[in-house]
Length: 598
Image 1 (cartoon, helix red, strand yellow):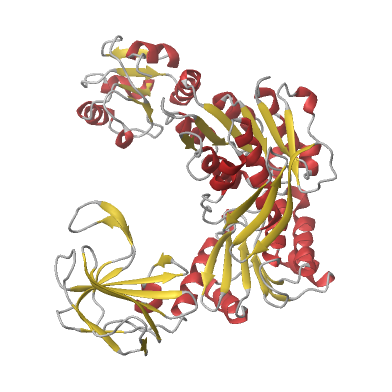
Image 2: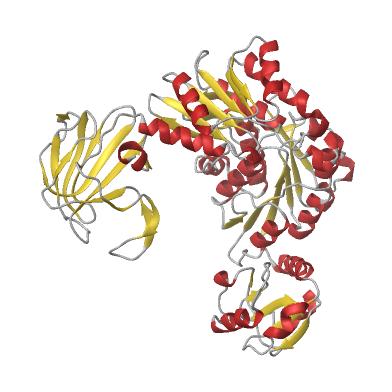
């Protein structure tokens, strides 16, 4: 955007330049002052209470131009920053988005669907990163402003932009696609998501249909061939070629398909078929047929832009699971918590139940399910159907929220087990109920629409399971000085993850083993950790003790809970004597507070 200037911004937005020189160059566009670099255009999307003060701060930061609502712009015109007055900041913002998009050379992929949008977007971004620079929506910011925010962060170095496009009200996909101007469109499935807002099942189909008109002749449309909704699209209105994927090989129109699907505790494995060479694909942390469909959709996009089958397979192993979207969380006792609390509709609920059922044997499957929102008049029957499916899959049910009785009735009709069903519920009661009933090697699915806020239940289950693990504190007196999380290092002053907790104590204070185990590591004089050791307690739990003055144990030695293993010191990178204590669960750092401090 280096060839743009203040005058061009005023012309594009239809605004009036109140101060500054039109020939002054500008760079990129930002919505927040904190994000602006020198020469950037700032178009704030929030109410400005003190326009003069705000403009003064923008000037000090070197902002290239400031776009403000006409009602407050005059009050900011005396600041040392060009000020543009716009009748509607919203309209000005989206005019800038479209103009900026026209100047971007990146190839844009738009992803929509009633379920699986975010996962597919993340998969496509991870795989395309094997062949170039990629920009994508942050999390699921898939509304018009989220799309604009992402497009404004495309730079000349980016080869691809992967945009999730949501459908919340009529014409939202049409508007989002006008902004994105995608080359490639992907539809994961078409179900009842937001049916109440879009006019029922037919309204959802009409909304998804609108993506097709925005794809160019040299573009591509990628569809889920196993989904009845996608099969109902009117493809005569699409200028781009269409490619189908699916799991049912007998369909003759499939471009790619999967064979040999295996679901295991760590993810899903399958053979990717239809490309130049058949390759085996591993999806760590992703489970079942829905994940395979998302991977197939991704593979079509990657093949279209020129990636090899091997690059596609490698990229798919690097996809990070998004929190709350069938995210696996390991619990002590070889138990698995599946956090699927971000959202729910009949399609995603069915897919989650089917995938969860494959992760534990019958008698060890449990689900905490809540309301699926925005289903309109179909809500009671759709919740009853969910209960029936849970029963058919051998999943015991805890049903919560407005349609709990419908889910329970469906489960009972199919001969299933209903543990608890209520519109009103207490978090602590549900946590106790779930953990007390979940056996070793069991799987627990927690899922509902995000308005139900079942994520607080999933989080509480994880913390309570940690508390029940039986670990004791590593020091007799607990004085935390630094907690787990992303923070500034006290020595380097750099922001970084702090994967443990720091406990202040005098040098020489005894450190004890928090549980029985085997010493798996002893290292002296590490530049950061100093003298430190690790103990493997089994069941995936490993604890670490750093900055010790003395260490009393050796690798391979068995230790008992409460046994003295070291003394507090200040070796390594420290500001004083303390114990840096870590807990790792199946190789992943977790917050020690809930395991031993409480």
